[in-house]
Length: 99
Image 1 (tube, rainbow, N blue to C red):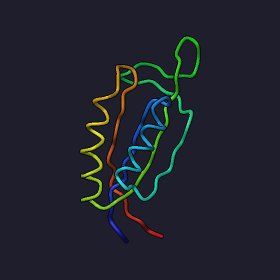
Image 2 (cartoon, rainbow, N blue to C red; image 1 turned 180 degrees about the horizontal axis):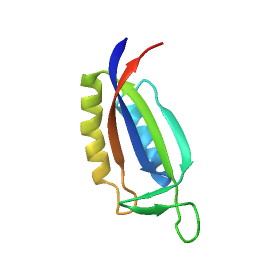
Image 3 (tube, one colour; image 1 turned 90 degrees about the vertical axis):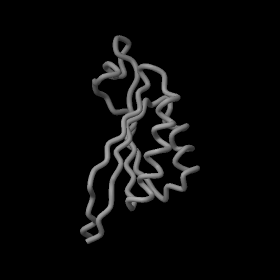
């Protein structure tokens, strides 16, 4: 098994292209994107309706500790450019590749 860290990045749908460009600049080798997600959190409800507009994308990427630490530091800077309601959230999850 190979121990790595998975980042789960939640981003307002309107900023996802910018986020993907950011990942390219950080030489992220691969990611998976899930689009059109709905939910609620500290930035409000994002249900894709007139009452609660907007949806969220989730990007998942996996890497070694040093790579993830560098990427996380960059994501902290990216988050500073988000206006209220566009919140960027990043979660680190221990991941072991089993197959």
